[in-house]
Amino acid sequence: MSAGFGLSSGSAPALAGAALADLVRECGGDTVDLRAGKGHGWEADGLTPFTERGVRVAFVGISVALGDPRHTPEDVARLAGAWPGRPVKVFADVGAAAAGGLVAAQVAALATGRNAADVLVETHHGRALPAELRELHDRYGLRVVLDTAGLAATTDDPAAALGLLRPAVAAVQVKGFRLRPAGGSDHHPLGPDDLAELTALFRALPPDGLPVTVESRAGTPRSDLRHTVAAWSRAHHGR
Image (cartoon, rainbow, N blue to C red):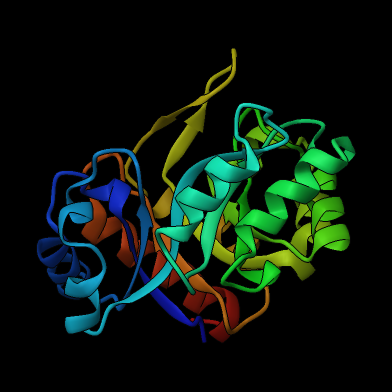
């Protein structure tokens, strides 16, 4: 069984923490992932509303990109230090695995107050490709947030990429999306047509231990989460 299902704060960025936690519960979930530094409504009250309602925080995303020299170790430490003991999610620029001392210093700053395995790097359009994310995992112990839209945007062979990333995956973030021919993607509600693809993706991942959250930018969090849970159940329980 998944470690928990739920929503990303990107599904309802205007909601305060208590309202977001209540929405997660209303959708049948028990997990949330949060994006900090983007003006989302949950930040005003911090993590307390989620703790009070028994909603697990899978990770907090912060505005850091490994390999970007603008993100100094001091700035990285400040942003990550706001969430002591919590997994934090960052990005990785193309070339981060070869950036040497800069990335090592950024990782050290991120790992202060948490294990390196709780420093998570997202698959994302325009960022490091799956092979490079695996290299960062092997070298530093970082793990991966498998964003479904980001995976599709960074590989022409999702099955091979999933095989490469499987040992590193710490969490899954599901989006309903369609890739644009010129790059990027458009968000859309998940539906029955997405079930086969989602099921195949989940089948390639471990059957337990992973939080699975939905970022529903199409405004359909309840049905998107329902379709996601159905795909997971079909992948791992045959129903």
